[in-house]
Length: 171
Image (cartoon, rainbow, N blue to C red; front, side):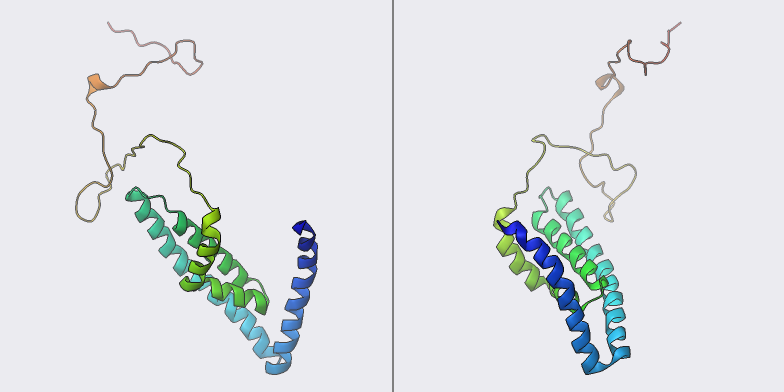
């Protein structure tokens, strides 16, 4: 029933943006209007990069602590949408984009849509990852490391597999 609103929205939105250009152009003039459009695009790119890196660090921290970063992922998605809206020409998209960069606004949206979003773990088993030789700033390895001796680990290969190489015979 609400699907008919999409074509209406696709017609009304550009018309509203054009009306915004006309109103701002009359009030400020051509060059100031173009400066605002270019300025908000540059601001959007700057904020997207800065806030995006902050969100990525938060997601990484929550993942290392074993928590599911549901709200942080939604915040990241809202920041990406805000950056895209600021990059698009138009004053209505700029207002919405700037509003989405404000944490209070994102929190309000989360309270509206958070009840409908469910984060599901795909596996009930704990996964371990190997971090190689990278160390945390404190000198300790980050994450659990499982150390196996040679007799604790062996491969069961399928001899009929096309990837099984020639057998190594011991002499």
